[in-house]
Length: 204
Image (tube, rainbow, N blue to C red):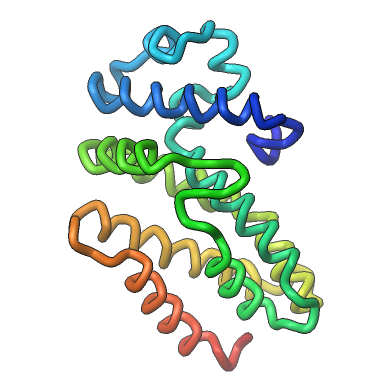
């Protein structure tokens, strides 16, 4: 499987992926995660089952983590663009700030965001699966943080701790947003990052 779901894809292919994702989310929202089949998704999106699996090799699991994979790709690109003299934490936090919300070169529609939220809200059993994928997909970010710290991430755990703590803050904020329609998730996430920065300042 590609490290990035967008690697080597042209704009037309990305539009197709986005279309399949949205159709899949609507099917899962209406039928439930376990009850939705690849055939349901293929029919709803107007593609073959083979095409669905070409874009989503792990099927429905890949659909549920695609938004996070977009975010990680954008985070990695933004972090690589930060000035080389910045500390790993500063580069990471500024990279997070530069991600353009629900838009960007790999796209994500507000409708997909809200439908994804509706699915996750009604089916909390999916949260564990999604979190496991989140951590495995973060390794490229860990490597970039370690490079800025001039350490080996297999021997020095601080880069991994820093990145995964940030991901935990993002997940806690996301779960709070699922439960509270009025939550300002961006402000809440900033507060979480402030707490992490204060707590890790001496170590980093």
